[in-house]
Length: 557
Image (cartoon, rainbow, N blue to C red):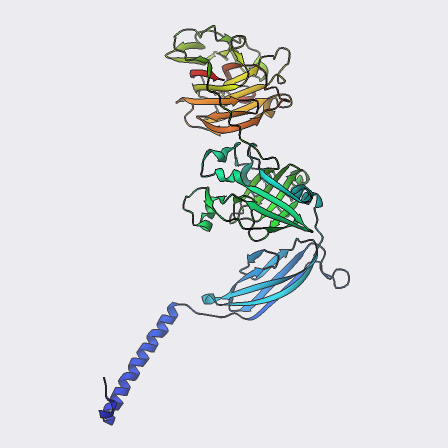
């Protein structure tokens, strides 16, 4: 320790000079450290103005009824602004300028909190009261949503496309339906990673004049992968995470200003009503969005559209129903018919007959059907149906179990390898046995597998009946792999409740059956390879021949 009392004056001066230098050194060092934190500027001269759209001091003191206010926030040293609008919604506005639409009907006053943030994260806050008139109403939509008091909605999981996505663009031929992806019936039930979606209960209620909403997600929410960080997720794909969806939300209705509304056909594509959920409310599938456009709504069915949060190029589509769908779990395990094609030569005549001849078969097809070994033979444990080009024409084969095996309901399995080449049209299907008196399509048709050679690996499953002939069939499709070089199992489970279509045990289409449909009487099996026609398309001019090989056919009841 230094004893200052024992130091003479000169030594004292020298010591003070040294201490001063040390102090200056440390002060300089501290200043350098402060610079590493960046400049800290507190916003000042903070002013917020609110311009009510359509305001006229005499005739419209609270606006024109649109509910719109243009907010402008300015402050020295501010780099960003955040608005808390007082109706449960918030937004960030880096420029300080934001046009807000209040959707709560009538004349309402809101306290708006505005936060200006400066460098270093220092913030200043101010508030402003606004009184605004909103005249928008859609009482019919509220009645549909709530039934006048409270109503529960569910994902319409049995419908194709109950979840889908498409472009959010100015192209009005594409921007009003899920162009890019449509979920197959019960698609998300196939994996625990996504099955939680179908547990959602969306509860709408009317409390006084306020529309309310609560999502009962049974403790889990299906998250789009782009928002997995909200819950600390790491799956890297859409996934069910434990998530508290929160309590009761306010829902304010407003007019839509979407790209769909800009179309000349808007009146047939959208209701034009937006649902705006407070406090981050969402309709079951988490896409970072709280505003949904009602495209259509009735007492029992609703279709909504929402632009994806953080990606305005995408629009998601959700379909809901008030009748909770149940997945038909019917299966059949008793083998009642099979052909394993174990004996080389002609197909078993006790099981199979033929359709013969040409004429287009109602679809503009090019082939003539024969029973020649050139076109149909059992060989090496497979039934082989070969389409052959002969000169400018084509021959092929079509086998059927008509009058040999006909049945009602069951599980039907074909294990097959499909032909290749543009213009080929293989099909594994069934037809109502009463077609002679109850002419097609009234007799019913169940297409378990159809394939277009010019769209390799895309498998179609379809039903036809009155009002749904040709291209109007109730259909869905799935993309498989290597269907012309490897065998796959094409399956349908047909019950009084539904007809379900599978490829390799993956469900891709489901149709609800009922007493009003023709799918409650005997059908028979058909296997064929057509060429060209309305489904097969243009035949590749280099085509010579190609075959469909069927390893087995099995029917269980």
